[in-house]
Image (cartoon, rainbow, N blue to C red; front, top):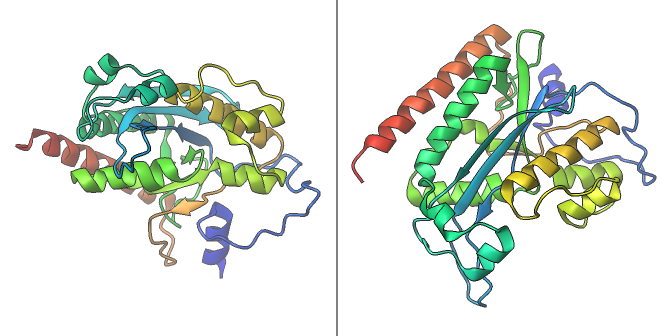
Length: 279
């Protein structure tokens, strides 16, 4: 029972919401489960030609690291990604995102981008003693800083990256299997359906900064919204996980930290080996 309670606290087991209709739940400030949030907002190939396109590819891969105690963005990752299946961007895509053909032509394939992203992750893990909420055993203590990924909807990590990696037989980092859907969290916390990211920001008195549908700007603004929600008393919890939660014994945190660093390092080695393999 204690293990299940812990799982619910981390948001790894979902339970029916009992939020009152007046939307006052969680208005008082509360200690966050996660010391850091990494916000991701991909941009992908897209069309408006009336045809059904089955495969979208990531063309911009941004991530921002938000400190949930200070609201500061302490680090950023950004890369343009070469689409391989549909290398030429549609006019609609370029107009929507502001991303130009030469920017993706000069970008890197997704497998290299993932390797670069993992190196950035490894760097911030070492600098800030971060571990990720990939299972029930991830417990926050003074020895480590617990971190979770945040997206605006499940599309980025649950659909776009997931299926592109499967199609291209790419090794996807296991820590990208769990995340917080801020759109769902916003709807539950404020008891209203957001009208897109910019609409959600406007509803809480924040003006969107930058260009909409440019991934890095979207990520920064999603982080701004997350910080506003935290200040309003929202407790950030995992809303979606592709992992199977194992409700068995809880390992000591130092062991977990060591194991997670090893898993990240193992992924780096596999990624580099994957990059050097003949195509």
